[in-house]
Amino acid sequence: MGLELYLDLLSQPCRAVYIFAKKNDIPFELRIVDLIKGQHLSDAFAQVNPLKKVPALKDEDFTLTESVAILLYLTRKYKVPDYWYPQDLQARARVDEYLAWQHTTLRRSCLRALWHKMMFPVFLGEPVSPQTLAATLAELDVTLQLLEDKFLQNKAFLTGPHISLADLVAITELMHPVGAGCQVFEGRPKLATWRQRVEAAVGEDLFREAHEVILKAKDFPPADPTIKQKLMPWVLAMIR
Amino acid sequence: MGLELFLDLVSQPSRAVYIFAKKNGIPLELRTVDLIKGQHKIKEFLQINSLGKLPTLKDGDFILTESSAILIYLSCKYQTPDHWYPSDLQARARVHEYLGWHADCIRGTFGIPLWVQVLGPLIGVQVPEEKVERNRTAIDQALQWLEDKFLGDRPFLAGQQVTLADLMALEELTQLVALGYELFEGRPRLATWHGRVEAFLGAELCQEAHSIIFSILEQAAKKTLPTPSPEAYPAMLLRIARIP
Ligand SMILES: N[C@@H](CCC(=O)N[C@@H](CS)C(=O)NCC(=O)O)C(=O)O
Ligand SMILES: N[C@@H](CCC(=O)N[C@@H](CS)C(=O)NCC(=O)O)C(=O)O
Image (cartoon, rainbow over all chains, first blue to last red; front, side, top):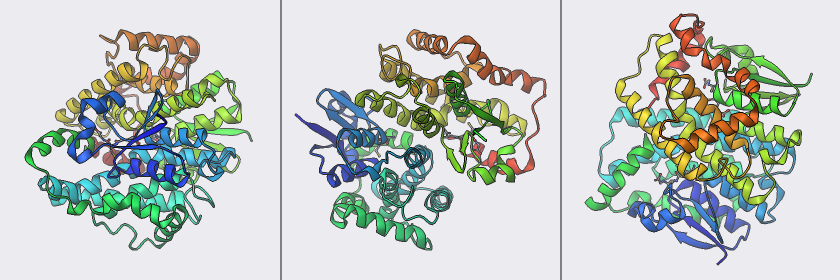
């Protein structure tokens, strides 16, 4: 058995891994772990990742979690173009800097925006107070501004003139609030053109394929009570 | 001018970089930016790092933030011993796996007690008991994962040798120890690991890096901590409000 990737394209780090592997023709077996059915909470998946999170990678008997670690592993194991994670010391440090920064900032904001704006009220049938939603969207706004001012600036891509892992990790995050119906790119012309550049670099078909699930999330049928009960503790822990 | 490191030894990621540089004989000009006074939110520092965060590295015109990025940069630039950031594919992946998890589950959680016990009271804000409890639970859970999943029965977090992962973890744990948490009670493997990492670094270096944080409670009790500047207040209040 070769490389196996445990993913759910509903999850933003999973989309980044998926796009990266596909774009670079890395052969892998796709193992779907359906989050909204709670499959990540199953005993079978705990064998792969006891932390019960996706993405996860299995390469023979080597198991690896954490999207950034997985992306870097694939980058080093397969000969991919240098721009994803440049050899140049300072160019690489810029990618590392972004990948470290995003965890508690863009990732948090985008996740909260998706759940507060859509998944709680629509999928779980749990109302979200207007104050909570407003605070979440305000936080997202601040983070987007930082992304634009501190990282993108006037460059073509987040860390320089070429696409890198940073762009992939960022765009897949931003598509979370987009999926929830937030106008992320409105009034942000720089981010909007950057998105087009990233989409073009990845390839529009692949980009669309990877984001089909999140862009349809608003039409998910509401969770049935058993699923809801199973998911609630996990969701609350994740969103806090 | 050589490399400059802007830091405050009160901050865990600052200490990780400090220890790494000292241990590896990397020449750095140290520039202390007093977090408690709020010097990271004043113009002079914001011109260097507009995010107002520590640590920050300045190598000529190149300015780098994020401790893990700085550690990787230094380890490559100064070709430090391979064990810190192994060139072996799988061993390095283990370091990144830890760093990713650390950013999600340790970083935000282990920083909170300082706000609860020292920084909040300093500006007259009390964190609600319910949040303190929640934080305690999250810390316990994270320590359990640290011991069971990352350490397992290996000597170090990412395998057989000491890596950047151990350094990042050590400093977060040190923060809690300094605030009176009994982290190692009932966690013998974690305790042994802790001793092993400190022994590797050397008692002298650890003492030097940790003396400020180990005196923080005493300073708070004696009211000898500096007063935060007005510029720092909004960010401090926001930080406290965001405690989950
Ligand atoms: N830092 C991790 C985050 C992984 C993560 O939180 N994945 C979510 C889906 S986006 C998940 O599997 N959550 C399940 C859980 O937290 O139990 C990464 O980048 O891979
Ligand atoms: N992920 C960053 C965290 C940096 C960070 O949050 N530093 C804190 C001190 S521990 C800081 O500068 N806080 C000031 C602020 O956020 O305003 C790293 O590892 O370097």
